Image (tube, rainbow, N blue to C red; front, side, top):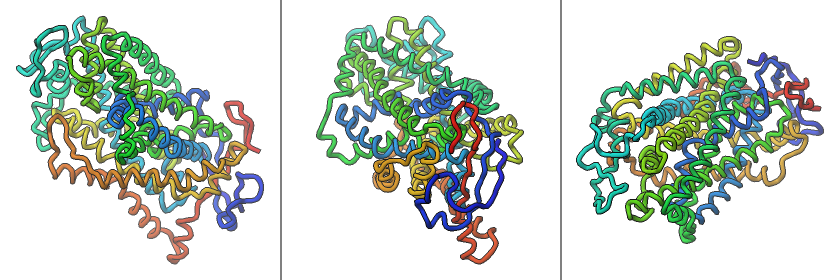
Length: 587
């Protein structure tokens, strides 16, 4: 980790020419000099694949296709593209640039922005921790399916298994099968009764026992995660060459296979059929904004961490455009992979595509798609590659989320942790594993839903809105000029100053004004669990005022002097040596 040295200087050392923000540069400010000891990516492609792997996750495979058809089909692409251009991509670019310029994680970076707001960094780490508590469990479910796929007849193909009930109805390859509201497909009962065993839990009040099969799967997942992260970006940068590229090979295979299925065209038409009247509904624009925000993933501290290992004059502008474009196109292509199969299922059930596509979330990945695969020729092969794709998609995002915590904490406490990365990563992985145990119970799916809804949701949007407002556009433009040699254009400045903050505020206010009823598998979450959810959400955000009070109390001097110290940022003097990737030094 970097050894840092503090000196006092005048002005903005990183930007040539006269300062654009006289008020900021008029007084001496402490400067952090970055040295060459900080880790760097071995190759530029390691960084790009890591960013793409983090941004492209399980949500791209199910969330975008579902939201697209629900909100007007092809017409939804208009608000989606607008929200990406004016909201998502500018935020994505901003976080990459911040991380690359200051070369530090989500906690220490606040010394360079506004020290009194360092609690935002701690809040981001808590949110990332909550994500690790439930997200890896979803990957463990995929691993359970992957293991179960190694059989000549997939176990969710028929109703002859010990976990099936009298409601199990297998309609594939059969005539005159009546499908009622009580009917359950073999794939649904495999997921709910064999994988999750939710029937043995009465809800959050009684989640039941830990399922040992899922415990073993989760242990294996965290073992892979540990040995991918323990040595830093030099090891994780190699792993992503597999985990970030393999999903695209599988998506291509599944898209070609889906296009050859009977009824596939029905799904594609349903997916893209534009319903222009939907654009008049506010909820469509809210969904577009929320989708692009969570799809690109700014605010989680991951982009800060990953870009902090870049050389100082790396072209982060081009990186932001390329990686965000890849992410959005992946979401769009995933829709064809999903809806060709949904059209096939509608053909087999002799129902409308809308009736098949009503499932969303993990149900689409663990019930609907596996059910279709089970009735294809070569079902075992397609099941194996599909769940390999899901595992690799999930692992990439886990790598990014945990690296955000690792980088943030190690940069904040370099003297203590700089030579103990392996032990620190091991301790973090153990904490995440223990925190995930409640999600492995019979009612673990309800815990996953609660954490996903309240542990991340509004908390990360509110935290990042604070982040976006504190830096100062002139100062940020000078920082980018010192890295790239040119100042960002008017479009980017307007987005950062006005449009992007409004974009985030719009999502937050809309979600608070229109709270959704929380349900899962016909289980309606009780009021007390909603209260617990709000407490979980507040437990991350609360670190912001706590640190502000702490900083003011422990800073010596009068109140005016304390405020001056707490609000005065330190400046970064980057490396002036030629970096290890062969790029020219900054003049």
